[in-house]
Image (tube, rainbow, N blue to C red; front, side, top):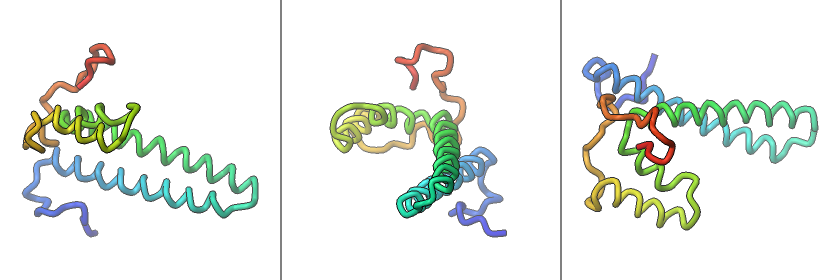
Length: 132
């Protein structure tokens, strides 16, 4: 069995990093499935088949979102940057640049809050406006 999601020897990686890699791979697989369904829906003319495929794509949306939330909860820096981009009005690229600069102190990406560091606050239990 291959483990293409690993770029380092798996036996040398901590369990938390291997779990993180698995969820990253799952996120990629769900995104691919969403795209495949989008293509199928674009060309299908049978209404019953369309309904089934729309339902299946909805499942992929759910799985993608669950994978993403898992990863964001375990990577506070990623979550902070994402919160400055997702569900925000305005230019996406500008929001992304501003969010990254704010989260990293303007100096680009830092090795802070790595995926293996699950001890950082997940912002659970506070009010929605203060989640980080």
